[in-house]
Amino acid sequence: MTFQPEPAHAHGTAPTTAVVLCNLGTPAAPTPAAVRRYLAEFLSDSRVVEIPRLVWWPILHGIILRVRPARSARKYANIWTPEGSPLKVWTEKQAVLLAGYLGQRGHRVVVRHAMRYGTPSIASVLDAVKAAGADRVLILPLYPQYAASTTASIGDALAAWMKRIRNLPEIRFVKHYHDDPGYIDALAQRVNEHWRVNGRPDKLVLSFHGLPRRSLALGDPYHCECLKTSRLVAERLKVRDDFVVVTFQSRFGKAEWLQPYTEPTLVALARAGVARVDVFCPGFTCDCLETLEEIDQEARAAFLAAGGKQFGYVPCLNDQHEWLAALAGIAIRHLQGWDTAPAGADDADDRLEAQRRRALGAGATA
Image (tube, rainbow, N blue to C red; front, side):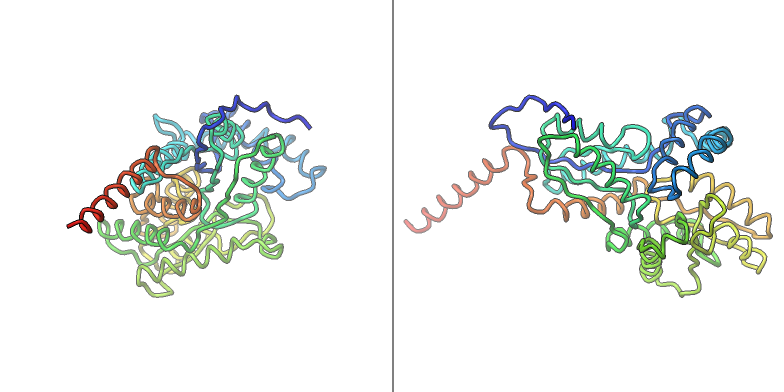
């Protein structure tokens, strides 16, 4: 095995702490070539597609990567911004804002973002923070609900990086936070903000990214965690159980996935006489292709075409204050025991202690 050369080490240098926010990733541009590169990496991950390589490889390279990139590129072009992919833009903002929120709470840490697929890769970001002196690293996936195809895949990328590093930093890894009170409050606040402006719908549809149904039998807790998130949000909103409908979107392939499916459910609601729905995607912490194009465009069109009258899309958490405060709280909980005080804090504490002792001494003399 070849280990990565270590950066020059300065003895006596105080170790620093880094937080690495990890998201799924995005193509670098809304073009067939960029989408093909992204899909090739994404769909080659055995965590994402659990089909034997001998069966999957000819399908992936012979059909999917020849046909799908152009179609997907057109969809990305529909939601692309002047700053780039919405997922990239929001993830970058969340990293910058999280550093500020942590700093306000007295934690001096380096915060960087990384993508499981595409750039910046998890390995490149870990290389950078280690070269900058980080000896403690918290890996914080932007996936509230745990799934093997998402959270565990980040663990795989981390493990691959660790295999080539000689002098490893101390690592902590956040598994999930689907029932974190701050996260639940942020979701409820997002919905309430939408209702204050637009009024309440007849139904609130909570749409989560889907997984093959067999993942449930294999022991993946994702489905249960999505249902718990939904139940807690409904409780926080103080709405009836039948007011909230939980669905799953983004099916791929012909196998059965977690049900009920989002778009067919919206069509059924419209045909049953439900005039207005609001759709919110609690599992996505950043708006992206799956929310802006699949839900706000495709699902909206399907609901209205089936007879629905009003379709409300509730934006993802993005840079919402309550969400960033919750994310900071999650990070702080997992940073416990690590020294993240600002430089010079020990000196300041010593000065305050000396002042206290002098004050006590003066009081005793008097």
